[in-house]
Structures are given as C-alpha cells and as structure tokens.
Image (cartoon, rainbow, N blue to C red):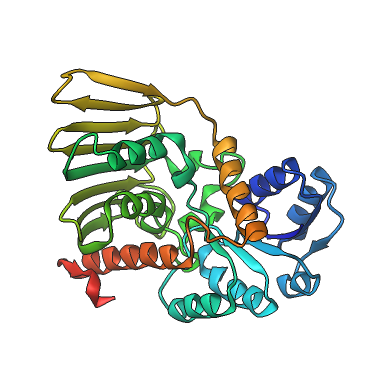
Length: 331
C-alpha cells in the first residue's frame, strides 16, 4: 500500500513512524518547510519528498494522511478526493463549515473512505465506558461531566507554542476546535446534540490570539445533559469522564489509568485497570483505517461524524459570541 503524509509536524511524524512500524514501506511525505521535510525524510529514510502537496498528489497513492493546520484540511481533502485517494484527516474536519457539506456529499458519491483522527474512540478507557453503557451497567444515563486540559506550551515542548496552529485563529486554533476529541466521543457515547450553551474566553497570559478555556453545556437527543470543559491551562495533563446513571456511576480517569464502576447493587467500586500508551492507541486507529481500505468497510469515524463534531464546535462558538442557547437544528 502506498501512503502520502502531508504535514510533518508532531502528529504527522507519529503517523509516519506507525505506518512504517505496520510494514507500509512506500511512504511519501510533504511539508512546506523544506528543512523539516528533509529532517523527517532522513530520520525515516524516505526519499519521496515534496514541498508542494499538488506535486505530491501526482505520485499515485492509495491514501493520503492530512496532518496540516485545520484551515488547510478541506482544500487538500478536495484535491485528494478528485484523485480518487482514500483520506485520513486529522481533527477537526475544518476550521469552519464552508464547503464541508459538499465535501461530505462528494466523498459519499465517489465511495472514498474518509476517516477523522479522533483517536479517543480507540482508547481502552473510553472503550470500556462504552462497553459498560451498552450492557446497561448503570441503566438510564442522566448526566455526564467531561474534562480535558493541558498547558499549551507543554504540548510540543520541542517547538515554540506561539508558532503552532493551536495559538493562531487564522490556522484554526483555539481550545474549542482542539478540544473536539472530547466532543467526538461525547456524541459517540451519548447521542447527537440538540442544544448547546458555551462560555469561552482567553484568560491567561499565553501569547495566543485564540480562546484558552471553554465550558459547554449540551443537551442530547436522548435527553442527557453533558458538561464539557477544555483548556490550554492545566499544568498537569488531565482527561476524565464521569457518567451518572439511575443504577450507578462510571468514571474514566486517564491519570488513574482506570475505568471504574459503582452500582447501587454492589455498593462498591469495581476497578478496571487501563494500561496503555498513546502509540498503541494511534496504532489501533491507523490499522483500522488501513483495514477499512483493504476490506471495503466504513471507518469508525467517518466524514459525517467529523461534520457533526465540527457543527457542535461552531455552534458552541456562536453561543459564546451571542451569549445564548443555540439549537443544533440551526446548522
């Protein structure tokens, strides 16, 4: 299988490493930064290197991994679609909704496999929550609290955070779009949103022109209330989810390396240890995408899922700007 990776930043580099680990020996790479391109090319012994992604797309491949800033995702994806290549897009699908509906329709019409890089669906802790929900361990779900936070300068310590897309509005940065991992698995586990209210702001002295914190309230079609918090400010990395149900509670906590279940029947916590590293999560994600291409199956996180998450993020921004409840039907 021939794979083109466009964007050789931290996530692109991780994907290159995993692709080679999985035995994909025909990998080509593209980046507008020639120094970075050659550095990554030398590191992974890749000779097919391109500065212009249009030139790279002329070299026939089976799939394209788009690992560039969100503001460029859709233009590259449309060009890859025209070539008939399958597409893996790092989250989010885009930085706004312009052209996204057309892309989704075209991808479906051409039967191209499109997968979004929402790797939290492949994290064992989240998968354990889904398993417990599906078997009715806590009965009807009433409410959910989701938290994600990490200090932005610590995300990629080898880089200047001010130069990263996360710090720049024009590139599609900001914690609301960066925090869509949580929004994606929230929709996956608890259903489509119907209404959203959001506060967001820049409250720190970080040198960014985007929001660095948000708090979101979501009501789903299932009548579940979700509280989602995200920030660029948490000095210790945090990811967790607490689910309140009629028969008990489920908690997943990344730092505790566990998913826990409390039921009214047992009146004690049952702990399911989660020992995992991020490379294994990303590897599961990429293996799934490659298998979907080989077996002609639908990816777990397709373009329509990506559109739903993006609509929720844009609705949350609209809510924060207009200081009002936004109905998802408006989008």
